Length: 70
Image (cartoon, rainbow, N blue to C red):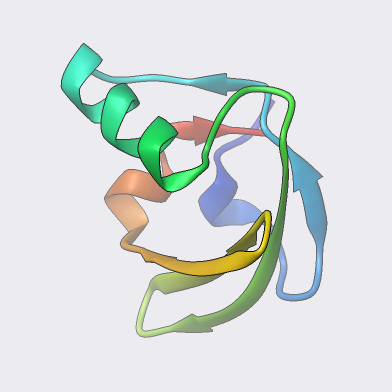
């Protein structure tokens, strides 16, 4: 496993685990980041990731992306 922040632009990956406190995991789940779902890295701007999750695009900073294991 590796953090989502290490995925390359254009790569589609599957979430294996989400770490952090319950509040953070709940917030990520509300954004669509749940275990066994697919996420596509659309672009990277200044260390922040633009991700395609289901039918929407979400921006995550590097610290939040490091909590999502792929």
